[in-house]
Every structure is written in C-alpha cells, then in structure tokens.
Length: 297
Image 1 (spheres, rainbow, N blue to C red):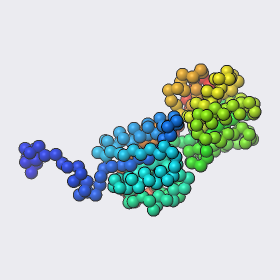
Image 2: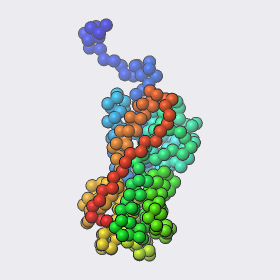
Image 3: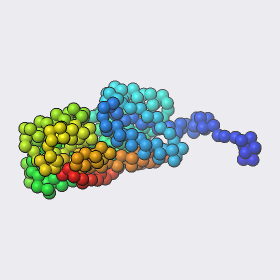
C-alpha cells in the first residue's frame, strides 16, 4: 500500500480525514481590537504566539476581532465559529458575565486569555497584573513618593481590577491611606489619558503617577510633555506595556512588560492539551510581568 501511494504521488485529503475523525484542526480566536487602541499590539502578539504553536501541531486558526466591544457582536462571532465546526476557542471576552457561553458554545474546549471568566468554567492564561502593579507602586514608594496618582481603565474586567488591587494593596502595606481623589477611572483612550493626567496634575499635587494600560499612558505622556512638566523631577511616571515608543520619550519611560507572545503560546498549548484531555481539572496559568526601570521614575 505504501509503495502504491508513493508511485501514485498520493497526498492525504485533509478535509476527508477531518470528516472521518470528526475534527477540523481549526481553532477560533476572538479578541477585542479597537481602531484607535494601541492595545492592538498586545493582542496581535498574543495571536502570533497562538499561530506558531498551533502550526507546530498541524492546526490553524480563524481570527475574529470585536471592533465595537459589543457583547452582541461577540455572540455572533461565536455562532459563526460554531458553523465552522471549530475544535476549540481562545477568547479575550469583553463581557463581565459569561454565563451565556454555556448555551451558546457547542462541545469544544475554551481557553480565556488576558482575563479570567466570570460565570463560566474554563482554563485561562493571564499576565500577573496584580504583581506587576504592586511592584510598580512599591518602587515609587521606595523612591519617597506618598501622593501617587492612578489612571486606570474601567474596572469591569479582571485585568483592570487586578491592577487596581495591586495599587491599593501596595499603598496599604506601606502605611499610605487610599485617597479616591488621586484615582481616575477612565475610558481606555488616548483622550481620556490626556484629560485624566491634566486633572490629577492640576488639582491633586501628586508627585508620581501609575497608569495601568498603554493607550492611557500615551495620553498621559502627551499631556505632560505639552505642559513641559519635568519627568521624573516634578512627576515620576510608570506605565503598563512595553512598546517601542516608550523607549524614545524624553526621558525613556519606566513600564511593566507583559509576556504577550508567551501568553499566546501557552493558551494554544493548554487548548491542544484540553482537546485530548477534556476531563482535566480547569486551571489558571499566570505568567510573570517585569518592571523595566528607565528614566521616568
């Protein structure tokens, strides 16, 4: 048989083979990407890690981006994947409550990336946002700062909540009372970062500022540079996520680096294992973040 196949230059038909095995070797990926949001870089790095790991195991993935951050759109994307008969789903959901997944998804495993699921049991792969934030604020305190402002995105998802908790507990553990006037909960946009930095620097006499995502950090730095506020002499700054632009500011920006590519690799690895071992206990996989100290603090 093998000799005959070789003589005939036979190539296995992957579609027919998948029908026999009831597998398509296809994974769905849903991530929130807004046209103006530089967190797109984060999720594209995650997607690259997923793609490379899947390719090593003969799988490919279908990417669907939620450009409106709408739960309705997310549900439609899942229905579309169901029609494609995917073998598994990797998702960074924008929904606060994911109980709807129990009725919407078919019999395939799900892995959450970047944020934990509420109301649905599944594996998740996240960066240690709590530890990263705690370490950043601890570093500012060690440098003598007591009035440390915080600019954070909305607290509906676990990512933002963890970073906020890290800020609060670092203050508490070092004997600094929490002051809600020093905290701005903002929409994750350049404009919101700009306006929040403006309000905090003018109204609260802060000496340091911790910003919990990249797009808010960009707006913050833009305002400070426009106003010629000396960093770090007048105001120390630590941001979240390490992209090229953070190294060419004046001074270069201290940031918390997330292992975005590694999150993607790990998510794909966990999903592939889950496909073969569906009864394994669900776990959360937490990857370390790293504080990169430059000239801004």
